[in-house]
Image (cartoon, rainbow, N blue to C red; front, side, top):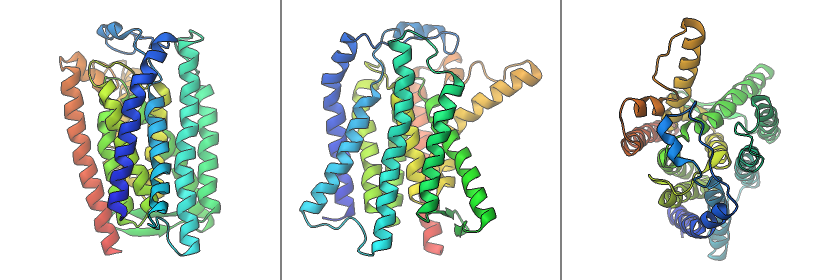
Length: 348
């Protein structure tokens, strides 16, 4: 067994678990009446027809991704394939990174679950307030960055430049401030992207492939396995979430994906690569910022509706067309980001 086979096994297991869980979980969500509340003031009016579609479907791929990753690690051990480095310090750092990835994503999922629970069970349409979301997010981010700092994982790979260490006091200050901005922005950008059937999972699928490849090149097999599980989980979820969706991931799922994606970027020491790999998330978040800024300053809209996928909807694009175009852009961005990462490693 090698790292490629391990990654494929992880993807297949994640796909299978996620897809099968849909058979069990969706009827349960229907029975519990965990239906999505559609707010027409933040989306096109015709989205009202989606009212009542079960939400919290992200639980499917959360279980699939985590279980597939851990099971694949166990399978590798059973077949004598040493996933982790034999050098104790490198092995320790990789284990810390793997654990930090899963814990960060799961913690963000808990915030999302709380928000979804309040919306569908407590019948408070807006869920958590911004401050109620932001405070726990910042606490989680601080804990994650502190873990990286204490374990000495404060270096970053910068495309065309190489690996830069932030060990000095000014460097550490930059590392924490930059990290807080990147993680908070990335998680919420992924959340913005979850606005159409199949959109978020569709653009995230190639992101998982990109990180699986980058981690393998970076000799982080366990992280590659996790990236592959992300790919398989998104693929399995799309069986149930493609248009017209039978289930929605909710904030439970989108915040888990956001946390996992940014954690994978930090695991390969290259958070800046999210500019390319997460190009759709960047565009979605920027469109929202531009729209809000323009309304406040110019009292005019730039887009018909934000985030930008709603603008294209209002312009007459079908959900399927938006999903397809955005996924293609994501694939291109992931290919560019992966190529830049590999090129930079070879020139270091």
